[in-house]
Length: 245
Image 1 (cartoon, helix red, strand yellow):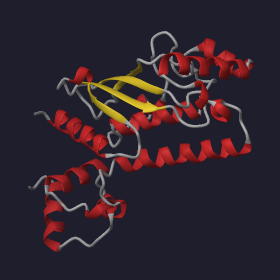
Image 2 (cartoon, one colour; image 1 turned 30 degrees about the horizontal axis):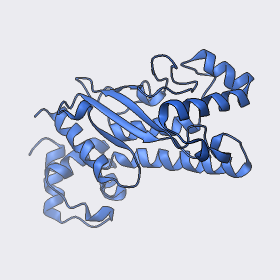
Image 3 (tube, one colour; image 1 turned 120 degrees about the vertical axis):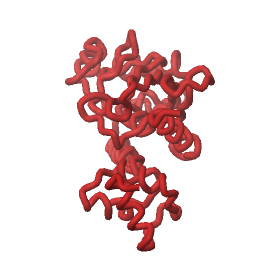
């Protein structure tokens, strides 16, 4: 198995072991091709997409993780940063802001967050963006209709969350977006304590290299808690990072 496929297999296992995020991903068509995946996530609360499930087609490039996965929505969605015709996505995380520390899961979390924070001034679909800017209530109505028709949302589940903005709903969406960003950032640590990994990052190594060394040497994750490594492990990790082991 190639390094890329091993990494993807590990990412999929991490997604399947996470019972809280509701993010899902696996080989497309229940096959075993690690270069073609299907992902999904629920529409975020207090948005027109609430109650729906959004499916994403994911292609893994040959030089992943140094290039981002190629993603597009297969569930039709009315959103300014997603093509209503092809499902193509406009998101910095999947282009100029991609980093090798990110994962398929963090990319899906970013897509979920995008549904809460559309950017009509940087659109993928100009028609949708124009409606959001000029006719926001009509936009909410159509986005809800598409959520019901294509994403399986229930009309009963829309309620206030169908886009009726209040101070409380705005606060909740901002808090959710911040939480999603933090989750995406911590994904790079693969369950290890951030301070534990960052001790080596402070030596000039990057997060993926340190995490890879820890996993290669089967360093205990200690349930994500910080602890002092034994001196022998410190030496083994450093040697691995310098390519001496």
